[in-house]
Image 1: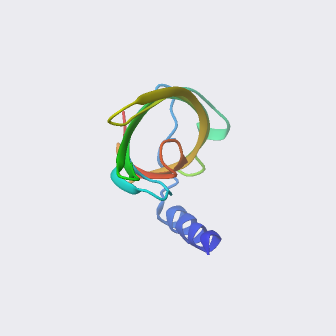
Image 2: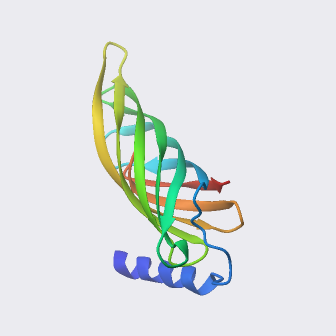
Length: 165
C-alpha cells in the first residue's frame, strides 16, 4: 500500500512539473523549513514535535546542476505525558544533506545530523549527544514557497512549509 501511494504521488509530481525552468539547486541557495512531526509512542502528546531548520547549498554538480551538497542547522521542541509525568524535550543539531533534483520543482535529499538532545521533567533533566539521519522531499509550488515531507530528524515523520531564497 505504501509503495502504491508513493508511486501515485511521484507520478503526480512529475506530471505537473515544468521542465523548462531554471535548476532548483543553485550554489548559494538557502532554505528555511518549519514543520510539525508525528511520532509513534505509547504516551499522550502534549506538544507534537515542532521543528525549524536552515540549510545552505555549498556546491552543485551533475547534468544541469541536478545534484548538490548542503549543510545547516535544525532545532525542535516537543512534550509527552507518560505515567502522569510530563517530559519536555528539545534538540539542536548540525546537518549535512545530499540533494538530487530530477525535475524543476522537486528536491529529494538525504543526510546525517549530529547534535544535542535535552529532556526535562518536574524533578530532573538530562541531556545527551545525538546522531541520526533524514530522508525527505521538498516540492516548490511557487518560486520561493513549497512543502516538505521528511522521515527521520526530530519526529518519525515531519510535514511542513519550505522557503527558499
